[in-house]
Length: 166
Image (tube, rainbow, N blue to C red; front, side, top):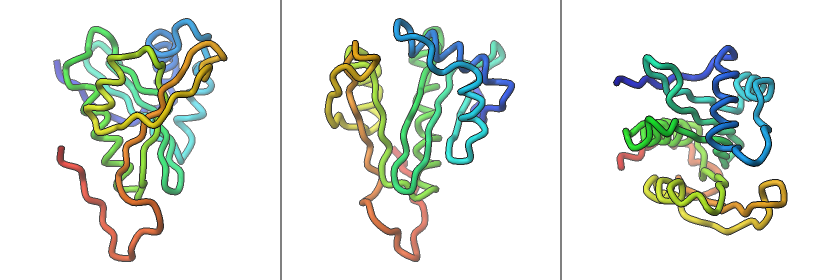
């Protein structure tokens, strides 16, 4: 089944929020409700990416951009669509966007017990940078991961984005 990637629109917020609740926030309380997702979609410093097929949203990613650092806020693929390259395609899109924006590194946190996600992020070039005990509502630890895209600091005047061709 063909999957397309596109930027989310505000009308996509309810579906993204439900996926966040069910796929990421399960057992933690629902923090990323539709109103919050709408604010992220409307934020010019945030990209909300949606992977869609004929059945609707198959996955999504939310990444905020700073001057040199990007933060992957949320990232999920429906269980029935995992291991089909959707997550890899979304991550490649995010990395290409970060490179184009001159970002030096992408950071993320994930539940320490989420082994499948750790393996995925390592395969996508991320390295573990530490553990934050009690990060999730004081109950669960988070693993911090980072992917370096370039050396931090000012960009040279002749800088052009080099797309990572892994």
